[in-house]
Every structure is written in C-alpha cells, then in structure tokens.
Amino acid sequence: MSVLVVGSIGLDDIKTPLEEQKDLLGGSTSYASVAASFFAPVNLVGIVGDDFPKEHVDFFRAHQIDLAGLQIVPGKTFRWSGEYMWDLNTRETRSIALNVFESFEPKLPPGYEKTPYVLLGNIHPNLQHHVLDQMKGPRFVIADTMDLWINNTPEELQRLLPRVHMLILNDSEARLLTKQTSLIKAAAQIRNAGPAYVVIKKGEHGALLFGPDGQFFSCGAYPLEDIHDPTGAGDTFAGGLAGHLASLNHGVVTFDSLRKAVVLGSVMASYNVEAFSLERLRTLTQADIEERYQIFKRMSQFEVIG
Amino acid sequence: MSVLVVGSIGLDDIKTPLEEQKDLLGGSTSYASVAASFFAPVNLVGIVGDDFPKEHVDFFRAHQIDLAGLQIVPGKTFRWSGEYMWDLNTRETRSIALNVFESFEPKLPPGYEKTPYVLLGNIHPNLQHHVLDQMKGPRFVIADTMDLWINNTPEELQRLLPRVHMLILNDSEARLLTKQTSLIKAAAQIRNAGPAYVVIKKGEHGALLFGPDGQFFSCGAYPLEDIHDPTGAGDTFAGGLAGHLASLNHGVVTFDSLRKAVVLGSVMASYNVEAFSLERLRTLTQADIEERYQIFKRMSQFEVIG
Image (cartoon, rainbow over all chains, first blue to last red; front, side):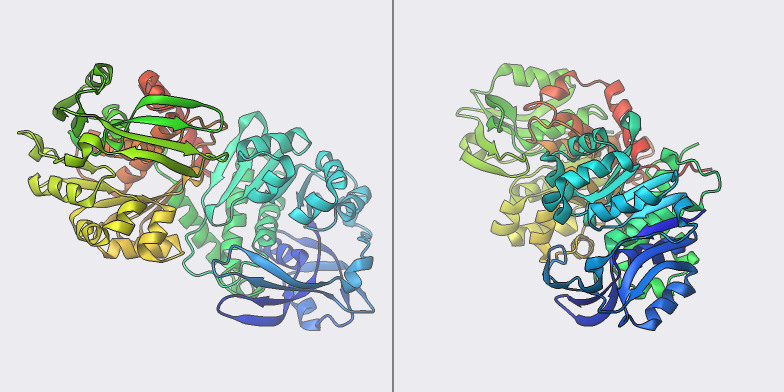
C-alpha cells in the first residue's frame, strides 16, 4: 500500500564543526519520502520554487515517488541554514527564508485522498489539519511536530492529536508539550489527548514506543562512531517507520508491526546521518538495510527465545 | 560460586525534592552485596564503626552474606549526606565524614582470596589494588569507579585497568576518563587500556555493554514513573550483574551471559530506586525479579525468533 508524505522541501546550508556545505536538498518531505520509498510507494505533497534544481526532482522520480502532489510555483524555494555545535546534538538556526513555502496550501491531487497511510511531516499544524480534511478514511495517520508548533500554535496542535493514530516527537518536545519530566508520564498524557501510539525519540539513546494497555517498546540506537550531519534524522526515521507499515500486506497495524517499524526507522536514520543531506540514501541498498536491521536485533537481544 | 564485594559501608542522610530521611543504611558495599545475594553467596569486605546499628548487620546476615570480612572498629561509621535536584538526575554532596573509613585497609580473611568473582566497589583505586594483590587467580574481576578517582587518582586508576576484566562507569565518567564525546570511542579506548568488557551506564537511558570483536549490547531502562531515591542504583546494578555471573554453574563468562547479567543488574537497580536506601530490596522476591526480567525481554524484543 502507499503512504502519503506531506511537509517541507527546501535547500539547506549546513555547517558542522568539521565541514560546511551549501545548497543541499533538505526539508522534512524530502527525507521522509525517500526513506519511505525503500519500503512502499510514496505520494508526495509539497511545494518548491522554479529555482528548484531538476536533479532533485529526478532523484525523487528515481525512487518511484509519485510527484502529482509536488507544486512547482514561480519564486524561490524554501531555504534553511543551520549550524551544529561541537557535540552535534545542539544546533542553531542561522537563517530561514520561507519563500514559496509561505503560501503553501497542501491540496491533494485526485486519488491521493484514498492513500491508506499518511505521514504528516513537521509543518504548521493547520497545514496538517488541511491535509486530513481532504483524506477519506486513512488507515493510519502519523504526525511529526517540533518545539516551534508546541510553543506557537498549542491549540491547533492539541486539536490535531485526536485526529492522528501516532505522534512522533523527541524527548525535549515531549517534556515541553506535557510539562512532565518523566517520559513515561509524558507519553501517557499525550496518549490521553488522542493518539493511540506515541514515539519519543531520544537521539543517541534510541527511541521509545508507547501503545494501548501499557504496551511499551524500547529501541536502542545504533552505535555510530562518526556522525557527519544529523539533519533530517527524525524525518528519515518517520519515513522509514511509515514506509514499513505501508508495506505490510495484511494492513493491520499491530504493536508487533510497530516495533519493527521503529527499528527500521532507526536503521534508516542511522544511515542518513553518515553523510550530508540525503547523500547516504542515494547509495543505500536493501541489503544495507537488512544488514543493519540484523545488528539492531543482535545488539538488543539478550536471550534466545524458544 | 561466590562473589567477593568490597567497598564502602555508611550511614546516609538523603534529601529529595519530596522527602528527607536520615541515618539510612548506605555505601557501595551495602547495595552491591545485598543485590548480589539474590543470585549467589557473597563474601563482604568493609569497615564500620562501633556505632553501626546491629539491625544492619542482621540484615546482611539474613541475606546469607558472609561477614568474616566486615571490620567493626572503635569510632564512627562513614557518613554521607546528599541532596537531589528536582529532576533526580543531579545531586549535590552536602557533607562527607570518612570517620573509620579513613583507615580502611581491606584485608581479606582466610578463604576469601580464592573467591572466583570479585566486585571492586567504588572506592579509592589503591584499595581496589590492595584487594587484587591478595586474590589468588580470580576468574572475573569487575571494577566500579567514579569522577572523584578519575580526577584525583588517574595514574592509580590507569594501573588498575589491566588488572580487571570489566570496568563499569557512567556516561559522563566515560567521557571524562577518555576525553571522547562518542561513547563508542570512549568504550574502545577503555578496552584498549585493559578490561575486555566495559559497561557504560546511561541512567534513565539504560546501559551499553562492549566486548571483544566489536560485540555490543544495548539494554534499555525500565520505564519507571516514580523514582524515590536514586542513591545506590549503580552499586545495585553492579551487584546484580556480578551475582548473576557468579550464579552460573559452568563458570565461563560468555558475552551471552554478560548480556543477561546487564539486564538483571538493570532489574535490580530499577527496583532499588523505588524506595529510599535499601528498603525495596528488603521485600524483593525472586518472583519480582523474574517478573521484571520478562518485562525487559518484552520491551526490547521486536521480532520473535525461530
């Protein structure tokens, strides 16, 4: 089955303590769509200016991503510039230019409204609402968010929660959203507000998945020695997760399938941070994914079952 | 088989944001010995003053802990007073009185020198050396340490590393010891300096185990909603880990047995922080341990094997 991915598409300038690169493909939709495309067909919804390099469009197309929902309009593409501190965990936004993204209205092209899986990438909650308003009975809706929306549009975000099956956010965002220091309590509070499932990402410490009836899964992080560019790790994670769910033939989202989805999302993110922008995803193979999935299995398993 | 546990025994005053308690049983040996005693016979080595309450001695004895190595000398018992900040992750030492601990010389009583498993609790590296000098071919030696010794006695600590099979320390200590921000690199550097195995504790984020040939295990943390007193969590972890190893009949320390030991250490620590001092360990049962062990298994497993 397919997954609809909506969010931002941009051109990034990124500086790490070791390197600086400009005019890179970026944006939550770019990372999430390409990551998801390794598992399932993707319907992309996004906007770019007429300066958007054709090679990036070709790259999406090479990944069999459906681009009927890609709006190419006169003007400049969304731009973001950021700098990572020495530990690569903290980053500062140096500049943002919304450009054509400012007038983005995610209108779904015909047929998209029946996509069974939906990943609402990290954009203004009202845009996320607008996509859901057009959908016809999606099977599973995942929303990503960030501190910006938690702080600036709390009501719109709260109204979104009952409309999604899963919310993905990082640990500091979960604490910010709920005013709880305990991630366990934070997840319970978010689940009470709507989504049956919550994923809390903990960066180098892995991710936690919470579900109904106290169901809980703790996924360790892949032991990376060298991280080159953390940009898009969360989007790649969400894309891999959503893609795996959409790939399941039976179409029922069970807690077991979500566990595996969280691991595959982690696998995708672990590869993505090995290079700038989406570079590592360009050369990634199914064998690479399988190899690292097996490593996750070995590193988290402590007793052979059966 | 038995495990020899050496370290401090003290009386603690502990203040958390919610509660304050005084004259509590504390010290690395107390926590580690009692935790280990759930799995294997324990030979305790420590020192207390003649003010040490008899009820604590009785408590050790009730856990079948061999007390031939417990020195009771004229004077006052080691005292520590600490306060935890609102997040329970940071703590401040309000006062320390070494008292009789200042003259502690861990002399092993006859028979102890052949104990196959040794846990060198968190004390001055020279005391840890002194114990090893008396041992006759121990099978597996585990050392705990802390920032105090990394900063104040770096040479003594470096000399200890080739003498132990496993070093246990927390993430900030691993970074302090190696000047590496990556825990993967930190562990590799510590392993190069001696111990075949390194455990890095990450508090609420679990623990990492590193071994030869790139062997790696990531253990999630138990999702505790309410932590009452984090004191002794690390000692309880180390005690449970060492106790499980000593309990294995075959006596060969494999990476698989170490994985399980790390999980059981985590189980013991997760219980210990549920109450002040060693209170939770007083009522703990084997069924409790088994129950939480199964939860760890469920929460970390993402694909049924076989």
